[in-house]
Image 1 (tube, rainbow, N blue to C red):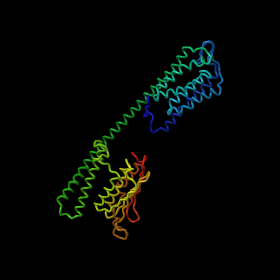
Image 2: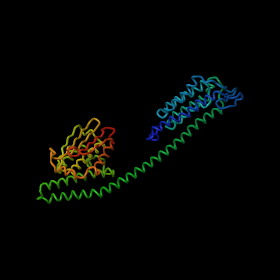
Image 3: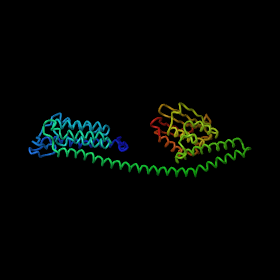
Image 4: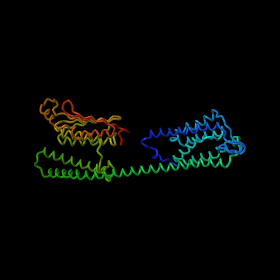
Length: 421
């Protein structure tokens, strides 16, 4: 029977591992100290009375001196217990061997079975039923008869055999009760998590409806009106027609991306990245730059490395960072020129979007007044959103003014396991 590892994988694994080791300490105290104490006293009487492990027909069991081998067997059975969660069957086999070895070398007396009891319970709790049955059978046969096998006493009484069987049965029964309670608690946690996920799904659907009602209809109307204006406005100036064309194309692309977002939120429009609803990534940056150029912004793209190696959330967030940066150039500094640099390294993706005044000399006086009166880009949500996207994949983002009065956004995003999702 396989082990249900979901019962044991928890965020607090470090503290739980410490607790597992800590639980061994009382077992070690009981087994080692208790057995040492029990070995100092007489274990029975000539009439056969006394504790179960020393109850014989002809004579009792007197005090014994534990030699180095006996003490080593007691300690060895306890030392392996901290590894019981990683190798439950192996630990069970070792503790069974040390326990039987002690019984044969010395005599079955005292709580020398404490380590074996914990190993049996742990293996049963982890789902190793057959090894537990085998170990329990061997213990039931050899432990009560150890003195008989070594010639120290006649065959044990029925009471001794019954008590040994009761010990094994109680160990398995109590462990099964604990396992059932833990499993029920895990089921309850899973049910609560499923309910929370359902509430989150319902909230995403609600957001999708709100997004569709507030944005999609308006974008569709903008696209339709721009198309009608182009169709009827044959006599319009060329610059006006170019602006209307850019509005029409941009709104159409925005509708495509909006449908992608709605599909993710609703989880009903097919797999993300399908041909119908492509997920925007770094391969879409040339289209983004082309649209910005059509809108009248001088944007230059420079790509180093293979953008195809970037995938997942990093790919999407990188595109959104570039998109937001270029949009800021279009909104706040349309007369500037922008340079988009994409550098794909071995384990780091670096993106830089820099806009600067179109006059290379920088001697014009009017742009300085314009830049002073322009609203700060830090006042909006764009920079905050970009920083959140970078932080979501374990990266960083810096944004601020340049010496020539422009603006620069630099994002560094990890590629690989740290940035996948």
